Image 1 (tube, rainbow, N blue to C red):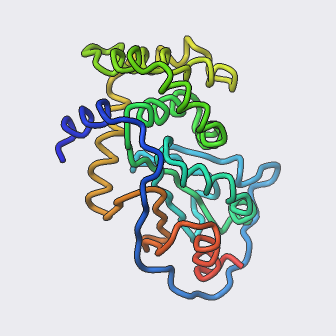
Image 2: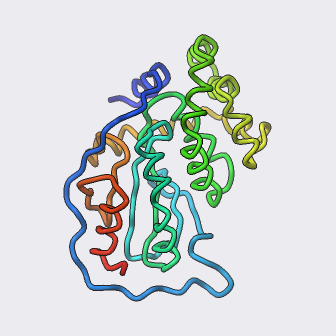
Length: 242
């Protein structure tokens, strides 16, 4: 799908709560690896960066195990995984695993959230995404309650489109309560290049990597057959994080 067509499609799409995920190969079995100490006075969990693939990565940038999640910010299964993947922090702190969150965009609200969490520093992006998933039901309900107004915001044809979506849906207030000021977010969303690039990455990478739903996980480039924390942890351990 052309990027422009995908962006138009996501703006027009209704909020859908329940896309399936699919995958294939688990990570190959490997020897147990020794933990890697973080630089003195720091921890690997504090380290984060935006990646060349358009993702948000946390952990040791040179970690031998690379866990990638393709996720949607309006996906209940992604919210459930976020809620039940607490042990991932320990794997990241070991220095053996770096975690990268990438987007598969499902709708306009999803794209707006994906843009907003990138309005701050890389270190705050994944925690903000988790806050969104923790409150997904209320976020979606608030947005759906604004039906006509939200539809009008999605139809705006100038650079204020995502600002208006954020305002009408209550996202400005939600993220202001979590450290991103309204002024900061509005200034960030005024640049149409940010959501355009996220949408393009979503389309291109989903096509190239066979990501057909969310969440979808990769460990060192291998797509996992399953979406539960148990499946992911088994793959991390098989790759040497034990």
